Each structure stands twice: as structure tokens, then as C-alpha cells.
Image 1: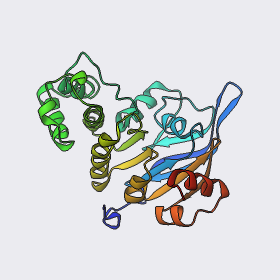
Image 2: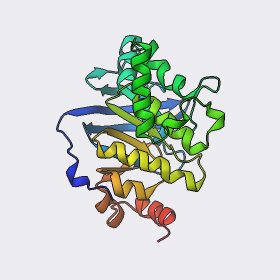
Image 3: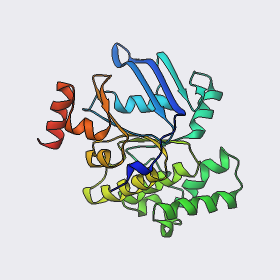
Length: 255
């Protein structure tokens, strides 16, 4: 178990979202989202498929464009200004459901590409950093292999290491275990638990409720594009307030 009492959450705001709305054509996918995330906070976003969870975190680094409302990430106001978008993306790491590794590059090359090109870090230094994070996710021996030679769980850990090589201040995870076999899920979650223990600000869309109980400061439940309920894990699981949350938990936890 992680001792979450030892992990400090600062009163400094990492992400601020006010009255954010998004449409796909006529479909109103996110409705009046208000959310403040503090530095060092670990938030799990849960909810049924199609509730807008992934769209919400993809709006935070402008992979999706919001049409109304305000998003401020790390003090930078997210607008259509490419300079602002680049500034935010360089501070926000993202880990997807599918690993999105370059198949023609080795693991080491996958990890050093962005630091060399975006941060202009010398190759040798970038490689040292990459090896440090590959050791952290416990696969330094895979550095010279190609993604296709690794298991799914290993590839996802490479994807996490690759994000960390940019030294982000915030990490976003979009269902990082949903494409994995059950025995590989634990190794990826263990990696994420270690990150949490180091105080990384994290937003994680996941169905892994055990992870939510263990690591989150706050669990957010979304349905039909809205934040229906949010609370600390103990209260969220043991004393859900909305009927919609109760139904979701009964389905996912089987009670």
C-alpha cells in the first residue's frame, strides 16, 4: 500500500479549468467542466464509456480543442496560440492506451527523440536521462531492442519512461492499462504507484479502482460530459452521493 499521508499536495494550482465546454458537431461532449488540480495531487477520473473522460484530459494539452471556457495549465492560458500550446505540452507528459512508440526506433531512441529535438538536450545527456528512467521503470536491459520485441506491459512502461524523459511537471494517463493482458496490468500500475509516491501531479483515466483507492487524493466521476461527483477515495467508494455513482460502482465493483 502507498502511504498517501506522506505525499504532500501543495496549495499551488497546477491546472485550472472553468466552465469548459466542447462539442463534436451537435454532440455536446463536455458540459461546464470546473476543475482545480493542485500541484502534487493525484486524481483518478472514472465513469462509463462515452462520458467524456478521455476528451477532458486530451483538452488539457490541446490534443482536443475546447470551444468555450478557460483552461490554465502551469500558469499558461491554453488558447489556439501555438506558442502557448508548445509551452504546455513541454511541461505535460501524456501516456495513451496504445503506446504510440515509433516501431523503427530502438527503445533508447524513442526516449531521447523529444529531449534532443524539443528541449535541445545534447545526445549523450539525453541518453543518460533515458537510461535513468528506463531503470526506474525496470527495463534498462531493453534499451537497444525495438518496440515490436517487447511485451505490451513493457511497451507501456517505455511509453511512461519516454514521457518522463521530458521532465514534465504534470502527467496525464488515458486508460494506460486497458489494452494490456491482466498479468501485464500490475507491472504498469506499479510503475505509476512509484511515480505517485514521488509526488508527481497526475490525472489518470482508468477503470482500475484498486489503483484509485491506493493512490488517488480524489476520485472524479463523470457521466454524460459532466462531473457528477468528486471526493476522496474513502468517501467516494464507501459513501457515494449520487444515484448514478452508486449504480456505476455496483456494476464495476459487483456490489
